Image 1 (cartoon, one colour):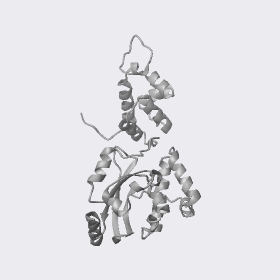
Image 2 (cartoon, rainbow, N blue to C red; image 1 turned 60 degrees about the horizontal axis):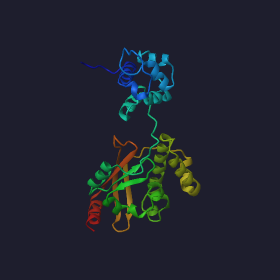
Image 3 (spheres, one colour; image 1 turned 90 degrees about the vertical axis):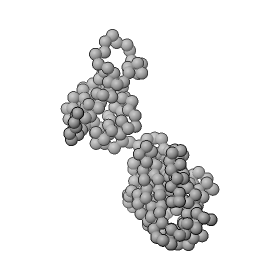
Image 4 (cartoon, rainbow, N blue to C red; image 1 turned 180 degrees about the horizontal axis):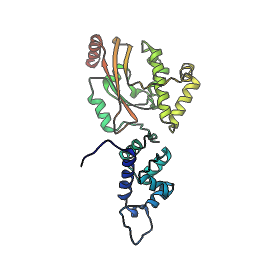
Length: 276
């Protein structure tokens, strides 16, 4: 079998049919019927489960060129009981972006926590889209601070930059770091409108920190996935690192930050930190 350039409309039709036909009516508590000519659910049953018209399901499965709205795609994904990978595929076919999950990670999955440790001797940490720090290795703790000494609500990179008495003065170009961080946070806020905890965090910081409120009002947006930071380390003196932020495919709501020395003096300084 050969494949050609994807026709999203035809692939959407075929995908919806295949997902519908694999479902077991017994799993839905549907009434028994004497004959089912095709496997799986009927179109009218999917329409009822999704809260849309039968005609709409028919037109989708016959590739008549309609493009369902985000709400219809969400409803079909639920009705067809799609797993996360299938849901993402359905959104891709309809040229929509899936809405964020209501479940926001507040702890690091063990595989990612282990990866953070294995990245030593490079400083590394794992954060969620709110900037909550979920995991870190000894090198990151030595370069910044031991996050375990902070109460959980304060293990947040934005809060640290604004309010922690040492971290506030840590960055040589603090204005740029803070400006980029606020722009990144606004981008995350727009992508996760259902995250009430994030909205509450932003409201609280805006109310109590004039500097944050001023930057937030400028509505700058940025995906801050790569760059450099110059710091004044209390023990090592001036250091400069390059950072890279990676998004795990299986945990797309989390961010893995890895730092590398930007120059030879920093490399030697971090080596002394590891040896201490």
